[in-house]
Image 1 (tube, rainbow, N blue to C red):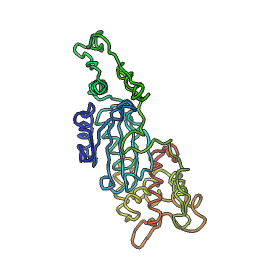
Image 2: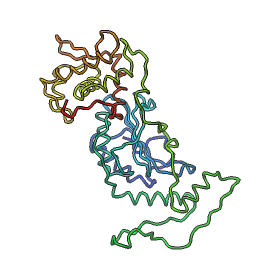
Image 3: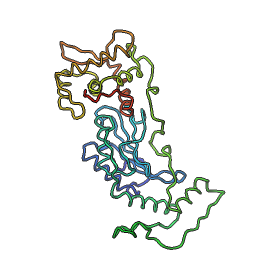
Length: 348
């Protein structure tokens, strides 16, 4: 993992949020899911000089599931992007809803990241605990912006003897005077300077982050292709199939996609016998997969091709290679739109 990768024009160790970046990186490394690169920087003056971080996992660090990026932005919190074999082939980009505070404890970030790195899924748990150093980072960020504009620091909040007097600013004195040159300074620069003088952080937009994909509306099935992938199957048809499956059958199909489309009966039975989220008894695997055949007859192409083939003599489950990539995109969408998936509280 590179905490200071080549190409950065800013020394990240001097940034106000660097302690938080290090704490999150340490928590990720402790889980065995350290990102390949970690970039820390701030946006331009026009966009408020807002602190941000980009953490990247390429396909070699996700078990071949595709690339992943986590983005943190001061005040807005954590976002994530699912990518293909290249980090620039971004499939989806959206907020990390389980993290309910802009600067959650690093262990919470690591827990959410582990589900994405290992399973390409969002955990159902929620985390609202703020990191203990959050107020220090925010105060340092405010002073950082003021210093860049030639203004004195506001000072840190008093913390000793937390009581009725706690939380007041420790700096006393006169205000500051600003000089704005309307011939040279842009409107955005002038507004940013005024806001910084009052200790405010101007609103930032994600489009100003280097290496960050543009923010897009929440994706749906309409984003998938209707081109023929082979045997009449399309990406949209594959997603509709995945969404209509019983949860247990969906989990088995996802596992087959994760391992490249082919696995032995024994491998699948062993994997799900001790599965934490979707345990399935070995003798029930065959019955669980009847959902695949039933949904295929209702949603699949108008021919006799099967999405999931069984080779009884070799005891193998097989998916055509041409369909594996389409299923990966279908499961990527399923990971961020669980509201579109069939659920069965009774079990797999």
